[in-house]
Length: 130
Image (cartoon, rainbow, N blue to C red; front, side, top):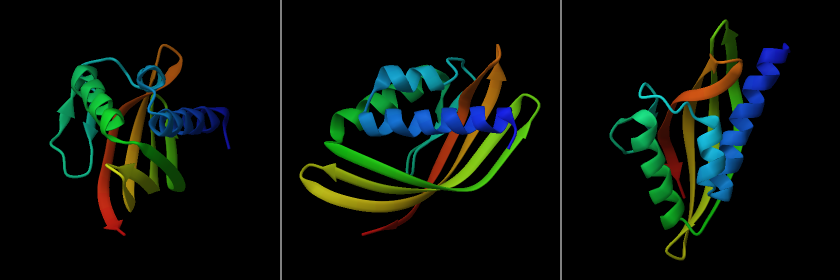
């Protein structure tokens, strides 16, 4: 595994830790702040720009009492300035006192900007729920 692969996987992991901790500041450190960033949550419309994406995370964090995410990486590719990680998200959430388990397939795309990898695209599609 190359150093760039390790760096991309570290940012990917930091994204999921920020998600679990419901930490908007930590989330902001892994996302590109540009207007070209895109996020698609399961069942949501396309969100464009960090401003819209940030707002979505704030709402998710506000409405989720507890979240735990375990990931299983399917594929990783790093090429020059762009990288992607395709994975399965195994999600346990508690929302309004209700326990929800779900599995999503997600793609996280990263861009190398100023020597640092940032998420520029997150797309998760719903799988199954218990």
